Structure formats: C-alpha cells, structure tokens
Image 1 (cartoon, rainbow, N blue to C red):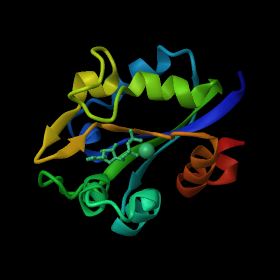
Image 2 (cartoon, protein in one colour):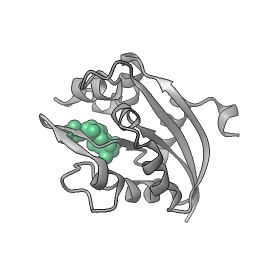
Image 3 (cartoon, rainbow, N blue to C red):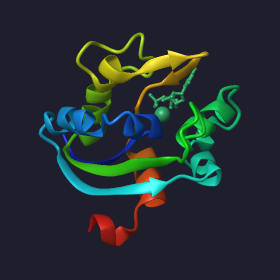
Image 4 (tube, helix red, strand yellow):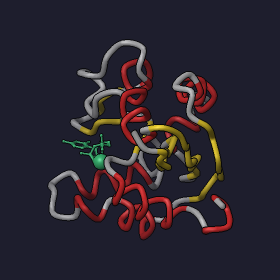
Length: 149
Ligand code: CDP
Ligand code: MG
C-alpha cells in the first residue's frame, strides 16, 4: 500500500451534461482526498499530448476530438481536471471509474452509470491514470507543481 496521487479528468461531455458533481460524489465515496482541481479549455494539441500513448491506434483522432470537446456540437472543450490522493489512489479511482467500455462497466461505477457508446467511440465521461509513471506524467501535463504542493 502506498500513498499515491492520480489524475482524473471529467471529460467535456460530462461537464456539459452537468454530471461533474455526480462523478465527484463517487470519487469522494472512495475516501480519497481531492487535492487540486481546475477547469481547462482543451486544445487539440493538449489532447494529443495527453493521449500520446495511443497515437498509433485507429481511434486516436476520435479520442483527441472527444477530449477536446469537438463531438456532439459541444461549443467549447472545457473539462474539469483534478488530482486525487490517498492510499492506492490509482487503483481506487480506476475501480470507481469502472471498465473502459461503458457497456462492460459495473453498475454503480461512473462509467457504468453515465458512460455511453456513440459510433464505436467509448464516451466514458472520465479519464483516470493507469499506473504511477502515467500518473506522474499526466499530473505534470495538467498542473503546476505549486498546485499540488
Ligand atoms: O481510459 P482508459 O485508460 O480506461 O482506456 P484507454 O485504453 O487508455 O483508452 C483511452 C480512451 O480512449 C478511453 O477512455 C475511451 O474513451 C477511448 N477508447 C475508445 O473509444 N475505443 C477503444 N477501443 C479504446 C479506447
Ligand atoms: Mg488509459
């Protein structure tokens, strides 16, 4: 068991649908602590950098557009970026988020409750870091060191 920090994004469709509070309720229920949060207007460049591990995947352009808020006529791509901290925070947030595919995500998880699939794209409302090195890279991409000190 280790005290970890992890990055969570409420993707633009979640913010647009007014479900950020519902998602945060489920994150707070884990017992983890919210240590930083900001609403960010996402450019394609930032979305590409965030998802660069998937650059070779056929779905790369679609997920960049989704993170940049360019799907469903969302007029701007603001999202809520957060850092959560606590014991085994990375796995705890992944559990609260549920499986990547909303159709496979367990009932009660964020993705199970609020995710949907649209033309093959998994619109799963949240991003959650996968492992400690991804978490460190992603937190540094979205936050300054002073935000999380
Ligand atoms: O977000 P997570 O770490 O659970 O999944 P990922 O494999 O890192 O994929 C990043 C994001 O791409 C997912 O959250 C989905 O929104 C999207 N995705 C998709 O639409 N179709 C796939 N076959 C795989 C991922
Ligand atoms: Mg991932």
